Image (cartoon, rainbow, N blue to C red):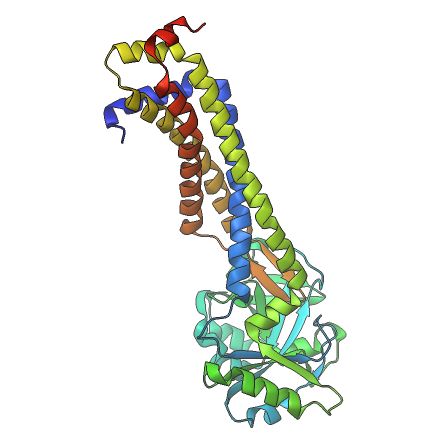
Length: 384
């Protein structure tokens, strides 16, 4: 450990060559910014697609259909599904999206029956603005996910248009569920007849809640068997499995981005190591003088490692902090087929980035520190 009285010396060595230190800090910051964004993408994918023991929601979709535009199911299926043993509730949902392709800026309208929404889905949502009463009274009202509202700069009382549908913002909601963060909840009957669709009695999917997690597979099989011979057969799966299946291409791309993250870490290691090696080579005689003044080889090594740690922490804090601000203000999310995979962000992302950068800084300084500590004083004074 380095005593606090040596910190001014370490900082002086860091700022001694301002241009080189600035370029190194900038490179580390850029690399850690990209690394933090990649980590946010991967965390968002895990949150949206990895099932846990508490999941009790199934999604009933039209068989062999993926895009919401193509999935059309009779709303009358509700009563038949509700009679299946193990089903707690059934909510018909109509989905309209501004873009069915993969994009960072998609508006997803979810039309749900008013009573079912207030009785069930609204209980898991936190209202951060507006009122549920206003949404209940107005037929064109929408409750916006916090991510969508932030990205579009919308607030309670605004009107906005997307996918040919104009709605009034009655409230802004917050939720831990990925699919609630980037969505606009509207009345089912309003959405069915909005934009001249004339799709009364037709929905995109059914969200089925079962009594306990163990009922997920039996209920899913029972639903699909029930409608196998109907004109509109179904495919039923757990909600997170449904997201993973529909967004398989996006998930594969995000998985490939892991290599970009490793590349960023390699760049950080190389940048810091290069800066430390150059600094040590320039200060060979200075190290010899410090040794004659009583500085031990171990202390010199710790000073050199600490120099790399300071550079990495400053660059890591800058890059990770900037990534956190961009993700928080931008409300970014990957959307495909009406499903949303938000970029996860929060204090843990910053802490993880800072810790990773600090570890790399220490690792980058170990070899130069070891070499400097092994030099004999006489050899150092002979160095040019």
